[in-house]
Length: 281
Ligand SMILES: [Zn+2]
Image (cartoon, rainbow, N blue to C red; front, side, top):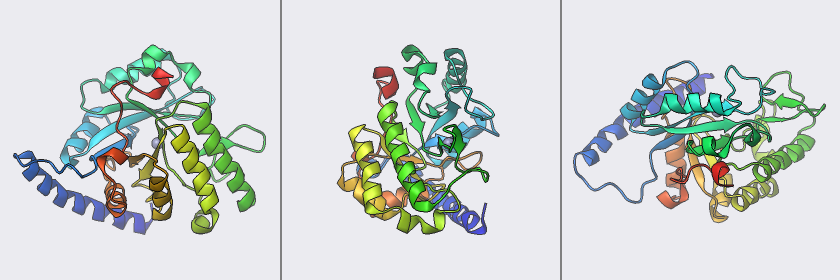
């Protein structure tokens, strides 16, 4: 974590503490603000903590959390990858009655076949991202791995945008996480590399396939020009931190972006009572 990120997070904690006080007034009987976006964080990982610790933090911060675990074939390398109904059911059972939404962070474009629709139906949503992309040999390449082959920036961007579109077109996703993230080497050129045409390709795919675009409080991305275009196109947004304990529920960037764009609750994705799209497709 950089010093700047640390300071930002510290600021977030203070702001949320202040907002928490205002929120407790509303809880005491005032009519809730009907135009405020919901206080949710749908991208939370349990990694180094228990569900009890995480759930308590959600209550303390006044944010409804959605907990996700990596899911897909065992070709995906993570400490935990849910790969069949039994593994997914054990995860769902662990979250039962804890006051959190239940989700998975699906990997690659072959995850849906790992699970039955009956089991997927017990989830609230499926989130995925484009951070693992086909490498030069066609194999899964984690783009944040220092050993990843990024290559020339312009060529990378063409493949990367096409990969976003493919992920949304080929699998039934509810949320696209870490939207517009770039590998470290390219991040300084973010404003140049994310041309309007590229942003529009990604946004068009999201609208066409009804996938909510995550506003990431961790990355502080996407930036406002992207979010404005997405709003104009009628896209839905999702709030997420990608937080590991105790960094979940810190959604300042999401709320600030929502305020800047004058988003209403209708613009923000919340899980459907019908379950994830994957259970209905
Ligand atoms: Zn994640």
